[in-house]
Length: 235
Image 1 (cartoon, one colour):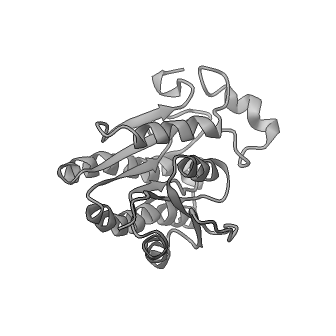
Image 2 (cartoon, rainbow, N blue to C red):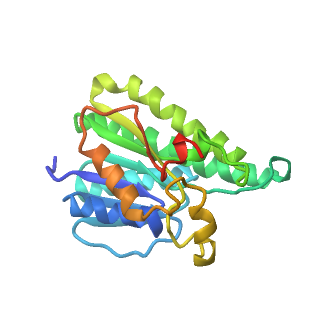
Image 3 (tube, rainbow, N blue to C red):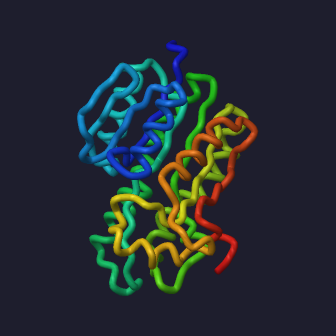
């Protein structure tokens, strides 16, 4: 088995995901990067897999690529997600199906397939990117379906941390506030910054630092790390 560690990052084409790919490569990891539409760039420490994370076949291909290219898997970052903010009664069945398929299904299919690889490596780490809104709702930002889906994954983080602790596999979650990414047009930044007590938007680097902290902290499992400008504390 190769000694170079290998991380899988989903939702990796832009924003937080792209920042995480760069952070793990900087740490000396080889990375398998996935999103629906990802530049097919390859390097000796990078493989890309284009595909919808809600499809179990995509999860199979991601793990197969990691093993064939790099020989192992040590870390999975479940970053892919979709956020649809609507008043609860305005959500459509399509909205519901989309959010469940990506936020829950993507997490389920890939994590289930990665765990045997982590067991083979003698341990490993799974980080789930969720959102502070699942614990601290905002009246100006209706987010019930995010709470159902990302909140479910957050709860599963602790259940899995306990289930696999004796095997040396850690599970943690990072709960960002609003992060400055291409998803948020510049004209919205001021209003979004006001959602955080620190009155600023987070940077992609803030989230990457948090994930890498958890990566390098072997005594930390079942933890939710809030990178949210104080939003979890109150408003």
